[in-house]
Image (cartoon, rainbow, N blue to C red):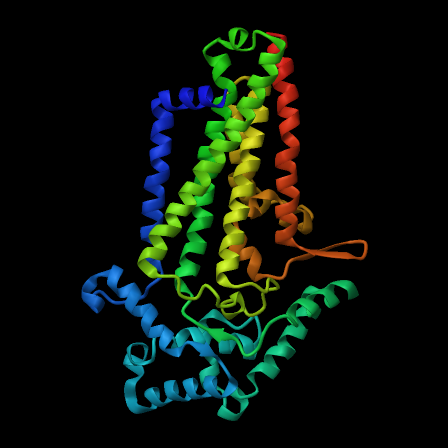
Length: 398
């Protein structure tokens, strides 16, 4: 039955075009990720971004290693010395490639989460002997963060416990390859979600479209086997489309940019995040969340297609849920906690991971991302028996 469903899909020109579009978007988004991960002028590296990105990573990694207070002070003093020597106009060119990464972290850790983006180099104005106390200030700011976001005693204790897991001094290694892939995994996962919803809806509606349902489900055992085959085909198509697409995106990006910074902790880019993971781990979490979103969209599409016998509504509903709902939610008055647990956040992991969103049921405190993963993977699975029963009843009454 699965082979039959795949043959039906591959006979359709639109389906073939959508399959090819997965490859196209993987190539196009990998190009954007590579271009946006470097900041070089037109003349650097002979204008070849494929060469420039490798050079930039190598330059940044000259500062690789633990950022002790003394080392941060030395880097800041070196940057200030260049400015004092009359190089303000060329400061960005003369300072090391890693200087701005390190200065941003130091400023945020020293002055707190709400450091103005326009003042991300505030650490340069700090006295050298104060800079050596940076990790003491960082710990104080983490405590303040737990009080700001912790509304109850349990929440404050939860945040403090998570913040205590941050290893200090932090380790620096150029992380831009992973940051670039991270951003475009989220974009690509939305595109793959739309394509997956289309295929899943089509698998369940095509028998009614071609008026072959009475023949296809001619026997009781054949009917049950056929429906199971459709469900498996929908899930299998979603899985293959998603991981081939994401795998191709990662392969193209990392083959050009390298994999530098995979073990760098996410706290280097977001010092007050409560997810104590490396860039590599967070990238994997983002990919897994995107996959869960695709499975949920496919399950919803299959259920609606089985109920309505059509593809249009079955595709529109997931689009409303994942693409339109975020815009509506910004303009209506609904309980904030409820909005932060909506499924569209599965495609917004980068922003979710930066802010310490926590929730509480009784004395149990939990974070946003683990809840999203567990709740909506469970919902995606729970919808499958409903789809089976709905489609079975529909065909019996045909």
